[in-house]
Image (tube, rainbow, N blue to C red):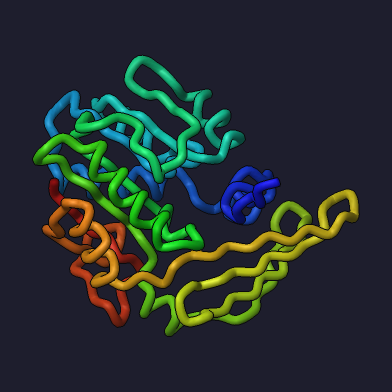
Length: 244
C-alpha cells in the first residue's frame, strides 16, 4: 500500500483548521487587493489558485471579476470550498504536479507556502513545470513562500498552543534542507494524535533556478503582504512574480 504523504493526511484533518483558525478572510482580502493593484489584470482574466485550500484567496479573486479555478489535493477542504462555487468560481481536487489545463490561464497563484512539500526534488520540478504549462504565453505566476533566512533566525523550537480546548504541542527544527514542524495533541476522545509538516527551505536562488528551468522568468520580488521590497535577512515572506 502506498504511504500517504504528510500533506494529504494533515490538510485533510479537521485539526488543521483548528490549529490555524486565525488565518482569516480579512488577511486574504488585503493581500489580494495589493496583488491586483500591482498586477492590474484585465476584467475576465482566467485565474488558477494552486493549493487553494478552502478557497479564501480564490473567493477574493472571483469577487474582483475574474474567472477562477481553485485546485487542491485535500478532498475535505475542496468540499468546503465548493460551498462558494458559482459560474465564475469552481474548485477541483487536483495534484499540482500535473497540469489542470494547458496554455489556458492568464494568472496562476500559489499562495501561503503551498509549495515545497514533496520529499523528492523531481516532484518539485514536476510542479514547477505544471505551473508554467497552465499559463498562456505572457501569463503571470505569483508564488508566496516563507522567507527561509528570517524563519530560521526566529525559529522557536517548542511551543504550546491551545485551540478549542485542544492543547497542541509543537516542535520545530531545521534539518539542513527542510523546516520541520512536529505536532502532537490529544483529541476530545482522549486519542493521541501526531502530524508533521515538512517544508523545503528554499531560497530565492533555488526558486529562480527551478522556475527558470520550467520556462519562466523572475520579474519582481516582495517581502510581505503589503508588497514591500524583499530583504532576505528580515522579510517575513518571499513573494515572487514570474512571466511566461
